[in-house]
Image 1 (cartoon, rainbow, N blue to C red):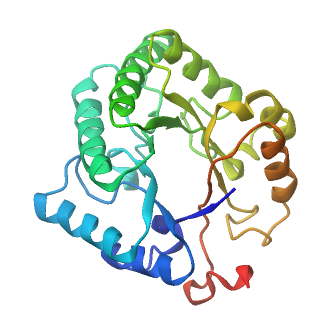
Image 2: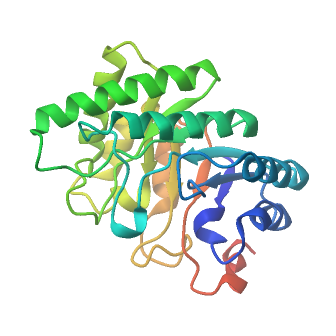
Length: 260
């Protein structure tokens, strides 16, 4: 398994356009990006500048998040929220347009928080319809949708692998197979599931893996999670993709000391 650096977390202290070169200087040839713009569509200049920065650094972008709304105020996407289909579509189109230029292979659409105005069934139906469209559109550019369970976010419906895979299967049944799980081992370690069992059951459905240690969401080795064992189990389950490093260094100047 190769390693990709999530520059949005590890290199958050640097301006966006400096991050690809900094990742390359640290020895990485693949990066991951959260959606880096305040709206669903960058300006032509912003898109051109990011594409140029990535190309000049000689890295590729393996994963790109969709615009997820106002993250600072707590939003985490809107795929499951009835009535926000246009916003989801705009986020999808913006990410896929930029992602096509960057050669992105996987997109994280963010599921959204549960809302009181709609029943759980209505929200799930909205999510399946939105994600099925996103998976269809992603497949047209040779990419996949990676649906991520999250921890520590009140009202976020997908907190377990089982809940996430239920949605994935419904999207596939709707005729859009280009979707699987974004298995973030940090988040999954906070669920009640046995992670080795999760890997054995769903490893073949992982689009990507991300890792950080716990507690603290620091670099691998800074906490107590058995990340090496989980990665070995993932290989045995058939996962051959990239492992994204999505951690938050205490000291940005020492962000890569653990790799020495």
